[in-house]
Amino acid sequence: MAVAMASCGSISGVYANLKAIEKIPISSSVLFRGSFGLDPVQRICLVPKRLAFSESTIIPKASSTAAVEDGSSQDTAVPMPKVIIDLDSDPEATVVEVTFGDRLGALLDTMSALKNLGLNVVKANVYLDSSGKHNKLCITHASTGRKVEDPELLEAIRLTIINNLMEFHPESSSQLAMGEAFGAFQPSQKLDVDIATHIHVYDDGPERSLLCVEAADRPGLIVDLVKIITEINIDVISGEFDTEGLLAKAKFHVSYKNKALIKPLQQVLANSLRYYLRRPSTEESSF
Image (cartoon, rainbow, N blue to C red):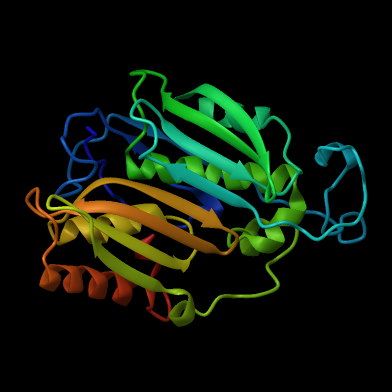
């Protein structure tokens, strides 16, 4: 994969007014390498909408019969929303998968919002399984036709999808971290960061290792994780980032000087991520 990393600038106050997301031309042989000091080419601004609904008019289920795919308005438990960003499965496009039980439509508004970020949805399909209806989108840069690999733009994609999900399915906010500030319903539970945080590094051949991270979700998390990894001179080759309700799950293929991480370096990486993710409070400057 080839991409150059955008300047990591903070994503402070992302709930109130997401700062500029930088798009950078593709040029490197790894996904993210070294520092975050490259010059920005273009800025894209994302402003999440504040959702305000009266509890007397909205209850935690599909907000209308149109929101339920089969057209019924029956009371059911709110399914867990999932957003998966996959950089591994397609060499030509970034694959995004959105699931919310059987309640999602064709995601036309989401596709329009992604177009406003300078992206094209080159392919879309839907499949069903026991967990519900899965909407899969293949996304590329509108200007270059290449897959999206810049972490700040990936975070913008993720937050755009979550924002649209809460707007058209307000009940989903009760199971999303972003719902605490912007949802019609705040999450009924909060995750203990110590319990929710899990970090493992595995050998994955002679040239790379597999880093697995599970943590409480928060805005800017993709950018923050990549920043921590690259600050200790570890390269991110590819990856996948999943948002599952209040949890975020990331898998990154990483290397050090084109080799798999040795055990001491694996420990340094795990300790650095654990320290950051388990801090009792996160300073605004880290977003």
